[in-house]
Length: 408
Image 1 (cartoon, one colour):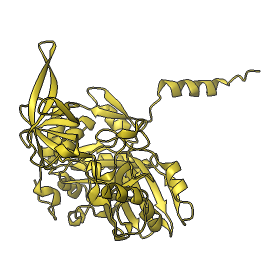
Image 2: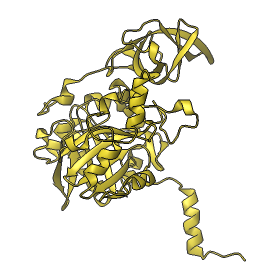
Image 3: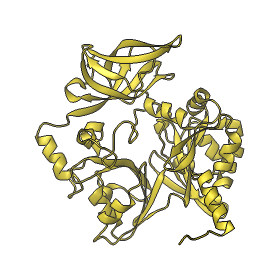
Image 4: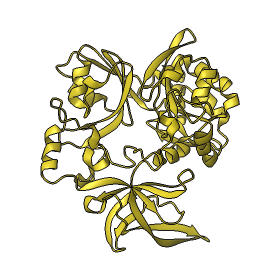
């Protein structure tokens, strides 16, 4: 026996299939500014890859103030008297060292020591945290919370977020009336009044530049956007998409889950998972604190000889980006893969992030080659270019750490 839908329900179902992606709270403003209609899927949301010009959007980050919508970033509210103990049990870093009003970059592993994800942990009060990350982990977090006096709720759709990045970003906040924002040190958090409520501002970002991230309830999203853009008109404020942000984060040597490494839940092959030491996150692993997920496996791997793979920075000859290029030793032994690459306008170098066999990943190693295929007159041309292992980040900007920030 079939069940007939009433006309209203049928129309709602049709609308769902016509628009399968979620809209950001800032979607009306993004649609107005999008000249290219270049969108991609970010955690089920319709998000801009580029809005008006990828290259100029990058330069907005480095010379003005760039606004990137981070609302699709997965966000969890973790609260309760046992919140610190719970997070300390699952995170690599010592959460007891994270003071209220501070943020730290962290990661978490499964019991085998393989990285499930990385992200930022905000300590909003002694008993309240916000965890921001790339992937969804609610079932895992809830299972891990058994026995702790803590509540875990996803708040992705309830909280809107904007990243404000670039040399004039503080000037925009100052002009918008965020009095006291100049006192924020890197990884500090503060709240400011906005439209009868408040906006949470952290001095964080994903560009390696001076920058901030702002979070408000979705109901106040558009008014926050308008406040920033009205104040930022004299400071070159521009909205950007992910393509420009990706250029900046590669220059900063920052990694992206399921781009530079495969998370444990996404890996199909057993040799694709990565431990923290294999992706440059060994500094997070705090062996002085109590037991945490993956601790025994990480210790065992270190005793057995360490990480078989390492994530490194490469400097490559020429100016053709080596995106997804194979890396060779002596032109004939395959030793790794490039996961992110650009010609850096700021560093004036051809740079890349790559995963290599550990024996070939020592700093200064220069007997490496990358295999690049570049389009030349409607034909792909194979090029073998020399590469050298170099330190990350590829650029260091004094303004990123300056407190108070200077005016630009």
